[in-house]
Length: 142
Image 1 (cartoon, rainbow, N blue to C red):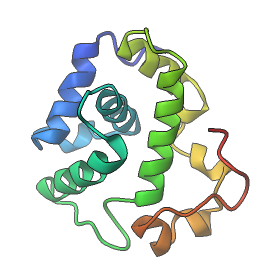
Image 2 (tube, rainbow, N blue to C red):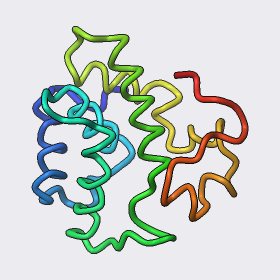
Image 3 (cartoon, rainbow, N blue to C red):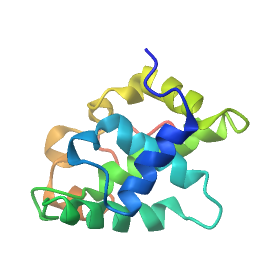
Image 4 (cartoon, rainbow, N blue to C red):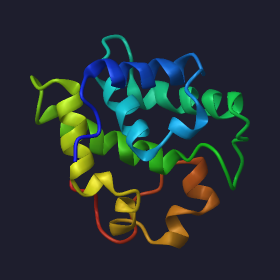
């Protein structure tokens, strides 16, 4: 299944997060990975340092509070960035939309992929939302 047909589509999502204009219904699992891959390929950006603030600001701009039960989630964000970075590093010369489509066709394309590594109680805990928590079921493969 092809989700994206050009790098321009990915850039539109990323810039929509940065300038807080992406319509909220478009902030999907696929869009999270699109933004992550775009930021990972940007010179001068540090995904682990930049994405949390971008997501928090976007959430607030779209009416989503960043609390202990909603909005930004540190462990999910950092784990997803690790997956995206690993996927991208193995495909350095490929167009970004091809990298993203392959990633989305993999197990990471499923929104529940993290539950292979974290139990629900741990992943959805306040601690995991606030700060990185190591997986409690098995280590990440990257």
